Image (cartoon, rainbow, N blue to C red; front, side):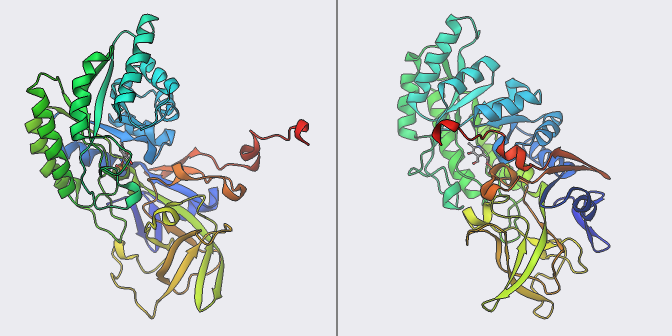
Length: 438
Ligand SMILES: Cc1ncc(COP(=O)(O)O)c(C=O)c1O
């Protein structure tokens, strides 16, 4: 599952005791395992080996340059949603012909930069955007700044419920994403009137943390018949982009192995005759990272125990934002957490239900509520927050003027700092006191 394992009562990231990282680098700290990253990337690659496919790692899930460079070396492409993410991929020398660009609100500047960079294609969310990309591409071609027309995939909204949190549901018709299939036909009909933009595929990303295969079957079923229908009308659609969304094991929710998703998706992709583009984020990076944190105080109040730790909602907002479950366990422990071979049911003699909370001045600042953890946890103990590699650091903020944690990557028996801890000077570097307003 991942390369975070207890050895003689101490949690290790690959071959490195995480106690060593905490001692040398402090807490809170994000720790990623290179081996797990590559293992998950390979699992997807192998699961879809039967069809021509391109894996475009979803940069929004974890945009650390070190993580991107590791995946680039493994052959991954990238799915970006902003000029900033594109810049990151350029920075690590990622091949532009493996970059797809999604997002409902791309600006003219972002579109121009992506065209000049020569990305593979845009995922277009509306006819207005299609027209705008054509306009910008025409302008750039006239100025001889680009040689080819812009290539796009039309994002459709298949109106399928992915059975996930409503904030990360995107494939239902009431969300802002894509265009419904009927309108999509109209957009394809209108497309030839826009110069310098070529619709080469169809994109459908229905949501994130999807733990059932059925929604993919339903969505791809609709998309493939849409593609077949339009191909018969001579619309040259050669790419089918199924987006991301494969769920991971967060301990409260089990996710099927990626091969099970592939089992239902591959035959449909084969029917379409298209190259499959996948945009996995969470599946590759989610279980590849932990957040290391230290208990600052143990506080009993109102018949409840609180473990007040040094990581807060500014470091990991998922529990506050989505009510997300992250397994938490002491880094040094004789007993194992339920997902790592420990008792599935909490032992009432050895555990206590506690709230694990951060230092931030918000009641919403928590990492876990009512969680059965070993009774003996005390001030100074280290805790690991598991499955924190996706949508963790990328959503971190400086709220309460707290510097963001470092990002550390482990390879075998050694670790390296990929992002250093932010200092107060880092936080204040763009600010000044303008004399004129005093
Ligand atoms: C268009 C698109 N592609 C890919 C992803 C990545 O999803 P996940 O991390 O669930 O694989 C997202 C995430 O929301 C997305 O919006």
